[in-house]
Image 1 (cartoon, rainbow, N blue to C red):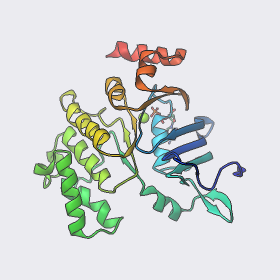
Image 2: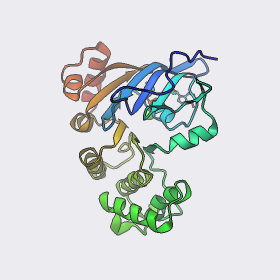
Image 3: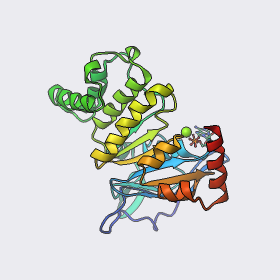
Length: 271
Ligand code: ADP
Ligand code: MG
């Protein structure tokens, strides 16, 4: 087992990052997908991840959702270990219970919405708060209706997903994630499965979140213009590592690394 002595039990300092990946390694058999990844996201920061297909972007989000275990390193959320827990003054791999508790800090929106098909928009939003957080039906309904209002879906709250357009379903999915009051919200290509004419209604909601909430957000996207507009920082992934990162104006305007330059000119040609 890995020697965890170089990993603190908690992150200290004046403003510890909301998310920290420290030397995180993830492999599938012989394939190394995350290669000693270091990544820090400050509280309230909006970070976008761009990069070629297969570079490990979705894997980063899946590790934060604790959908799978990592093979090395440690992930911290809100100053405390997520993938590990303290036992007798040392970090040991997290128990299922620890993961269940810590997972509540993180919400995720997927490319394919993943709404429950047999529930209405409102029921989709209420399900987690009632079942996982133990809110009363009334509290959950109030919270959910407020969020459906915010994403512009209150008029459709009693519709089932099959009666909603892709853009509408994605807006309900964002409200559903927010209903859990996560500290960190993850977006994985949430506009990639949408028809071009409804992409704007989803990006408008995300813009609203960026300007009105102090939520920490990590977004994987192929929409370079959108990422450039709303992000505090862009991370360009290549081969399971961050090849280059910086403020949008720098990364898009004056990329320093050859791989970043190649990627950006290739996506420009594709548009
Ligand atoms: P991206 O989102 O950047 O396109 P991913 O993070 O989904 O890339 O995948 C990174 C690499 O890991 C790819 O080569 C992919 O095939 C591989 N991979 C992802 N999930 C699995 C899995 N469950 N089993 C085996 N390989 C996987
Ligand atoms: Mg992906």
